[in-house]
Amino acid sequence: MPKPASEPEITPSRENAISSPLAESPAFLVRLAQLRAFDEFHRNFAELGVTPAGFSVFALIVANPGIRPGAIAEELRVKPSNVAVLVNGLVSAGLVRREADRAELRASLLHPTADGSRVWREMDRIQRETDAQFAAGLTPAERSQFVTLLRKLLHR
Amino acid sequence: MPKPASEPEITPSRENAISSPLAESPAFLVRLAQLRAFDEFHRNFAELGVTPAGFSVFALIVANPGIRPGAIAEELRVKPSNVAVLVNGLVSAGLVRREADRAELRASLLHPTADGSRVWREMDRIQRETDAQFAAGLTPAERSQFVTLLRKLLHR
DNA sequence: AGGAGATTATTATGTAGCTTAATAATCGGT
DNA sequence: ACCGATTATTAAGCTACATAATAATCTCCT
Image 1: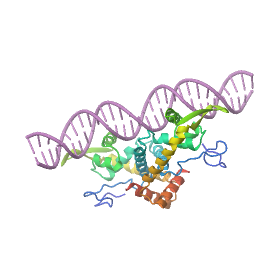
Image 2 (image 1 turned 90 degrees about the vertical axis):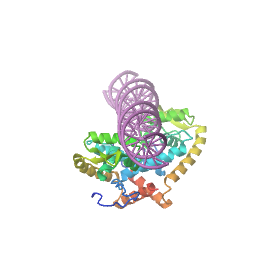
Image 3 (image 1 turned 120 degrees about the vertical axis):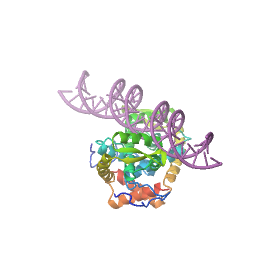
């Protein structure tokens, strides 16, 4: 729903825009950015019946065949119990299979199925497109800068 | 994106680091950043019994006395029904009061109570501290750049 | 003026994602 | 060979959010 183009871009209510004391807060802005990222994701992945979390798990499995659930949990900052249910979803969707580790009978090694590898190519394409939409307001240089800053902020 | 031929270049922990195909994705990094932001928030605000969402609503009310729930919902990208329950929490905590609008009997105008204004000063202090911790890995210049990029990305 | 439909707010209900706790199996050390 | 630690999964519970239902009031049209 478009707003009157000549007005200021926020709150065309009465006379003055409302003051946003959090507009300078990195944490708050990151939260808003993430809401938008999820919106974009759901819009683009609605067909494929996969959630952001499930997708990230699948991405790790494809990039690291034979990875173990614990490693995924650590990498994605989620609890191992979550990884298990997400993997269940991927298995029942036929994208991933669990394999026993002969040297570690506790562990299960995760592999993409042949079907999974094929589906992944499509998902990967959509994901790049989604990222492009998400960062559409930034120039390529700015986008690169943005990624660099995020990584620096996180890699502490 | 080729397969890990011999050795990826990131974090040589034990023998082979796992490959993170999402490490260049702005959307994924933003998600990780937000997880960390919430961690920091909860660590610092545990005493005050307030959630990130409740805090942001309270911040808007303090900065814009007489604001209406609908405006808050729009600004924070949450549903009006959520604003109502969050305001309920703030009211029962004695931080906010609802006031009738003589010109708009449907609307309720939200004000901080005297107690709320006092409590806010402490919250504001803690929030600035939390932001500082969150962005601790960045230099002041980088932090400013980061905020600029986030605002540009969002203001589309 | 009177009423239909739109707007604003709140309450009620449902659901998805995540956490912690419980269970099971296996490993490693002494 | 046992006992505590590790790995994985399942089960149960909680929280934040969305959608739907309800209520009140405003606007506009005839």
